[in-house]
Length: 253
Length: 239
Image 1 (cartoon, rainbow over the protein chains, first blue to last red):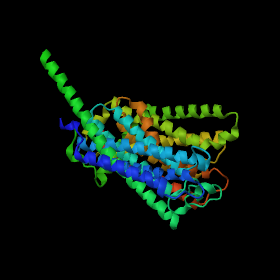
Image 2: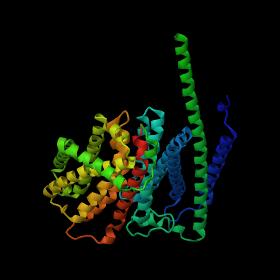
Image 3: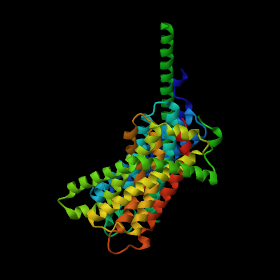
Image 4: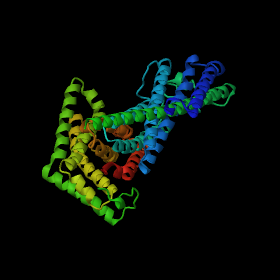
């Protein structure tokens, strides 16, 4: 069956993701300058931001897929939404873990509830994890698609609110990517990214960051096509199972 | 039983729309007046929760006062899930939802009606809770600004709650699923709302500039959730 072989698009994206991630790794470790106060630990930041960025994009695509499903119900949109939420959740987890590893040397603690970003992102994580609880509780396929689409639209409100609170609530602990926050209390953490003000060193950092974001975007695209392909296998398998069952029942009667 | 002509998700509310909203609200209030099962369950649950927490924090009254605002919101949220479940379970048990859906009214009107009636029930609960909290914790929860924030927070919470409960009530796991879905979904609203309430707990009132950001977050959440519910509710109740 043609399903068992990777088609051309999947193969190209797999390779593109592999190559761009490898290049990003090289850039992060060899091209990006060592940060002044944090040292090598700061290199985590490139992956942290890349993963967080792709997480937000994944949830936005899930929102679009959900809205499209409601407009015109089709299995295709449901699959895209599931795949995107699933992958977005993985990227969000990566961002949280990477941030936590960075936070240990910067804040001297793995976790800090007083950081607005950490809190809102954790909330978003919980909201999207609950998406699978909802799906698991509905048997009827059409109804599952419909409810999941409504939920994924409502869940995006938490992403919007996260974004707004990151912009407008004064977060003393979490560095802002462009500009930087000067704060005597947590001087080290806040200063560490002030390099992003225009300068020779910061240009290289910005380039590294861009490379990492691009690499992560390719990784997302590759995972998406693979996940959608996987879903097709699963549907095909359950179809075949149904056919076998109905054939057997036909033989018996 | 889907009337296609009533399924359009976007309508301009006219007087017929508002009268059907009012009919739903009135129906719910009448049922509650006779049965009193939603508000009484929520109040009993809240009392038990507050007293339980008082025991847990008894050793340290200062600590209890510190966490009072968080406790107030947590109690409202948990009691709210009970109220929401009850409010929509009644419709399912008596198959009244089917009857309402047969009526030629817009689904968004049903949504708004349900949001308004459930908000009224939770507001009654909050009035009692505020009274209890003033007595137990000796904090100025009577301030009009605090009441206003409680009101705004409740609208957003119930707007999300009615939408989610209408879905969970139709699933296999029902009551169990609601808190898992609704509590994380409402946290972006409750956190800024609780921040505002805490800033009003001191003798000196905060500047408007201090609460501006959390207040606008609460308002944005309210508007977004109401809009989402308004536009998608008919996908949820259709069978």
